[in-house]
Amino acid sequence: MKHLASMLVLMVMAACGGDDARAVDIPVVAANAFEADCQTLCTLGTEEDICTAKHAEFCLASCRVRTTGVSEACGVCLIDQGSPIRGFVSGSFSYCATGGASSLAGCEAVCDDGGAAGPAPALAASCALTCEFYMQDHQALACSSEGSALCRQGCAAAIAGRDRQCAQCLIEQTLPTRSCINDECDCEPQFDDQISFGCEDYCDDQLP
Image (cartoon, rainbow, N blue to C red; front, top):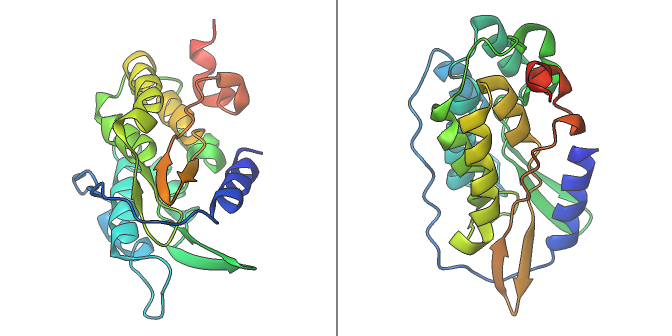
């Protein structure tokens, strides 16, 4: 349902136009043991005309974050369940699916460590990638500080107080949204810290 809602928001907002002056500065994330796989998933196709080099940069950073600090079996699953970066056209709408390593949703059997990894301040990069950008459109958009504030606050609290996999699962629940007024666009990602919305398995050791 989360993915469906995200798609609906994307298609409703896709009609908004205009340029935004904020620089799209993707956080730098260190490479890890899955670098070759991430590079493969995040390389633009030769005929790709919707996703751009900036989307590929975002894909690679996200792939690195998702596969850092996890077990080898978990990382392999996230890569195997991942998808290549690719643009799509749906009627009059076009959008970029940034691809990369998958979310944790399909890899519970090998990625649920019962909280063994402990808190993960390194996921700050995941918060930035999730809360500070809207990457579905052909033109990548950096959110304003005001638009991303609540998401960043919620995400920071999650990575400070939850173990790595629980925090990452909560981050992956974030709903990307974008709105435009007079061709001026901003994004306001909606961070959701409710464990019961799909993170019960990863956060079951931290239920009240």
